[in-house]
Image (cartoon, rainbow, N blue to C red; front, side, top):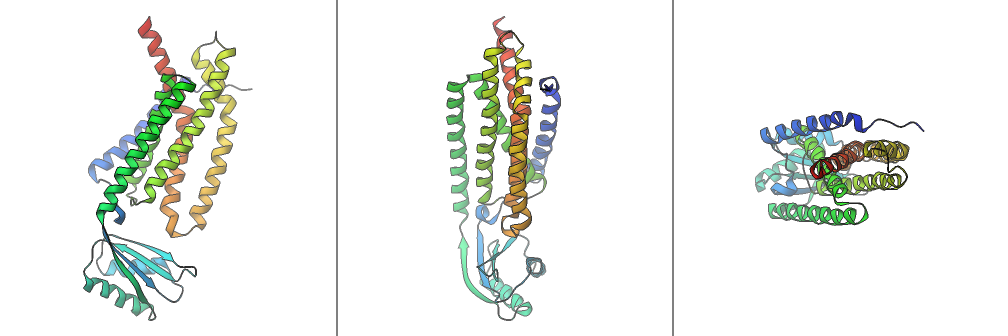
Length: 290
């Protein structure tokens, strides 16, 4: 079996990640995030168009009314209903939206109009942060027990890497951050740690039979053994998510696109980042002891 020299190029792997994250941080500082209505508060308007329509036409109509921040999606079993989420609007503007839609689709009626409280968004942020902290503490404890503390730190740092890549993606392309963002982050973290554990487990097994070999050689050999598995798993997952992105409609487009980036980042970090960090931590410990 061919053994790939992964560890010898770890500076390249770190460099690629650092470049993407740095670019993302620049966008975060300059433009910030595009917070969705779930986090900023606003109005939710639910219409029944009573006929087929295109979301692009709806967006053009809303933009002509000089409403800058809004989200649109189809609803209902027949996909003839429309949900518009906007910043806070006056009753007069809500009526104006209805009248404008009626000009294009005369049978349009407003089913319901609701106010979205920004407090809910703050609560979601708080719960998401707590969930991530608990998850990372749990994984840190589990990996320390199963492997060693240095590998646990490496795995958690690779997860932070994945989260930063996804955040950079949202910041660079100004994708609205809504409640689905939390699902994206937790899904990516779960997927990434699973792949990392598989590689770490193979490294642990090979350490028993390759005790006299340098640790980096053990990592190269272990990654080479699991590379086919990691590649096939990731490609299969990405094919499924890409199909959802293409065929799933506008409602889940941002969600699936973020998942594609997150799964790709998770695969990358499991193969190139986590094991490299483990190797660095082990070598620094040996140097410190010496």
